[in-house]
Amino acid sequence: MKMRAVACCVLSCCALLTSSAFAFTSKEEKIAAAAEHLKTIETVNSLDGENMKPWHLKYSYTLHGAGGKSATGTMEEWWVSPSKWREVHTENGKSSTHMYVDQKEYLSPDPLPMEAALVTLHEAIVHPVQFMSDGGTAGLKPVEPQEHPEKFGSLALSCVERARAISSEDTIPLGLFPTFCVSADNALRVTSDSGVLIVANLSGKFQDHNVAVKLTGSQNNVPLFEAKIDSLRSMEDTPADWWTEGLEIYKGGAVRIGSGVMLGQRLSTVPPQYPASARAHHVSGAVLLRAIIGEDGHIRELEPVSFPSADLALESVRAVSQWTYKPYILNFKRTEVETSIVVNFNVY
Image (cartoon, rainbow, N blue to C red):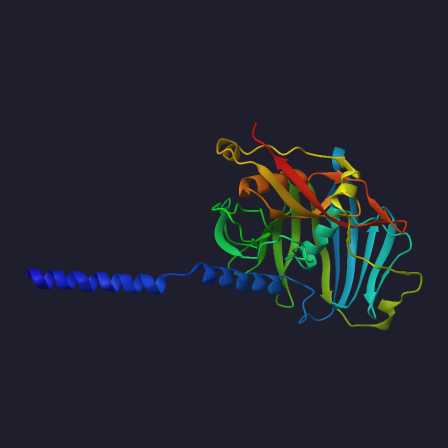
C-alpha cells in the first residue's frame, strides 16, 4: 500500500509538472502576443487603413490653454486613401486647408497654426495608435510590447504598452511608453502617451471599425482638450474635392535640430521631482529623451532613449511634457522639430 501510495504521488507530481510545462509562456511568446494584439488594436481603431472606403468626417473641439484661455473650432477631413486626403481647419472665423493628392502635399498660404494638442487630438480620432518612428536614432532599445490588465475605476481594460527593452530589473510603469487600453471588443478606451491621457467617453462603429465619438485629453490632471464627432459618413470620390488652386506646395514633417539650439529656444520648464524610491536607493544619472516639439512650441511626443531607472524616466516624461519653446521658424513658417532632451538627476 505504501509503495502504491508513493507511486500515485509520483504520478500526480509528474502530471502537475507536465501541466505546468504546457501552461508556461516564455517572455518571447508574451512579447509576440502583445505585438500581435497591438497590430489588431491599431487596425480596428483606425479610420485611415487600406481596407477603408472613402469617408467625410467633421468634429468640434475645445483646446484649453494656459491661464484659463480656451479655443474652439472644427476640423473636417475628406479621405479616400492614405495618399489622397484633404483637411479643413476652422477657428475664429478663419479656415485653412491641408491636402495630399497626386503625390504632392499642399497647404493654405497663411494657415492656422496647428497646436500640438490639436495634432494629438486629430490622431486620437483618425489613427489613435501612434508612436515615433525610430528614424535611425542611436541607442534605441528594441521594441518589446507588454500586455497587462488595468482597472480605471470600475472599468476593467487590457493595456498594451509599446515598451522598449530595459537593462535594469525595473517594472515598466504604465505610461512610460505609449500605452493603449481596450475593452473586450478591442475598442480603444484609454491612451497614455508623452504625458497626455486620452479617454474615449463614448465609442461607436463605422465601417466595422471602432471610433471615439466623444473624447477628452488631460495632462497631469489638467484638461487639455475635448471633442465630439458631429458627422462621419461614407462618400463618393469626386474631382471637385481636390482642387489645389490657391494652395502652396508644402513639405511637412519635423526637422532635426540639435539639443543645444533648442536649449536657446526654451521658454519655460517644469522641474522634475526626484522620485523617493530612486533617492532612497541612491539611483542617479541622466535620462535621455527624444522629442517632437509642435509648431506652437509645445511638446507633442516624447520617448525615453536611455535612463538609469524607470522611475527617473517616468518623472522626466511627466516634467518635460509641460515644457514650452519658441516656435521654430524655417523658411518663414512655423515648423515641427525633432530633438533630444537630457534630464540629470544627482543625489547630494
